Length: 111
Image 1 (cartoon, helix red, strand yellow):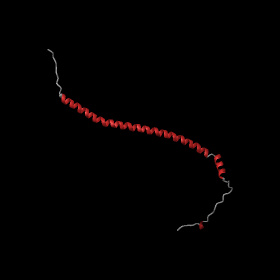
Image 2: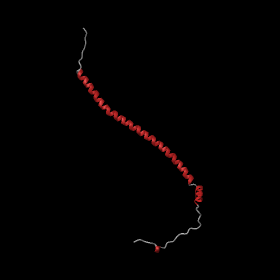
Image 3: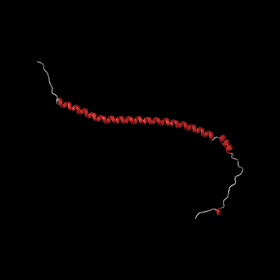
Image 4: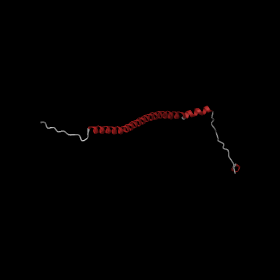
């Protein structure tokens, strides 16, 4: 004679399958919103990284343009260029400045 121990399951097979499907359904319902949130977060992070990269490129462009403008400004405002521009425009050197004097009693006032 063989000694065999048989244990019966505490839940019948029919109920066990139902529990498995319910458990799977519950996990599936929880994973869908988490997956959507994860995709949204990844999308936001990639978008932010792309914008950061674009801003870095724009900063480099503006820095280069700023240096060019500083050099140009220094060249334009040099004394040699100012003297040549004065001669081009036909300005003359003045000797003495004469001011117009206004007498206080002849000033116009409005009432």
